[in-house]
Image 1 (cartoon, rainbow, N blue to C red):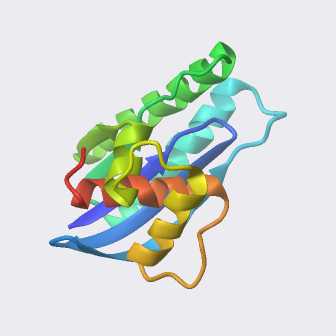
Image 2 (cartoon, rainbow, N blue to C red; image 1 turned 120 degrees about the vertical axis):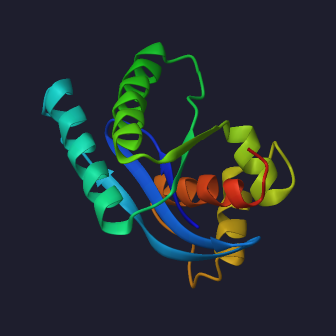
Amino acid sequence: MRIIGIDPGTATVGFGIIDAQGNKAACVDVGIISTTKADHDARRLHHIYVEIQKLFRKYRPQVLALEKIFFSKNIKTAMSVAQARGIILLAAEEAGLKIIECSPQDVKMAVTGYGQADKKQVQKMVKTLLKLEAIPTPDDAADALAAALAVINRRV
């Protein structure tokens, strides 16, 4: 099964694609989609939509693991992330993907066994579980791989 994990954002969208067989996985690709801050919201969201569609066509995943929004004190950031999530959900629905939404705590539990693990612990486990030479950077890319891994570890 091919899974694409996505860590949504407006400035940066992390993605990680894994091939899973049972509870084992191999990294196919990992990276980010970046938008230009000078562009207006509609242009940034369109760019994300187009790039996500390209990833879906290129890699043909069956499952999308999408992180839920972590609400913090910055409501403006939460709103823009929600817009990006909407665009990603739309593209996934159009592509016929099974959509699995997971909270950051679900992902941490699935990858490290501890729902309050810090970012460094999650990143180290992503590297270990996927037998990578280095921790994926930036953090958004590593978070996306962690979301994809959460699906095969049956925590979401």
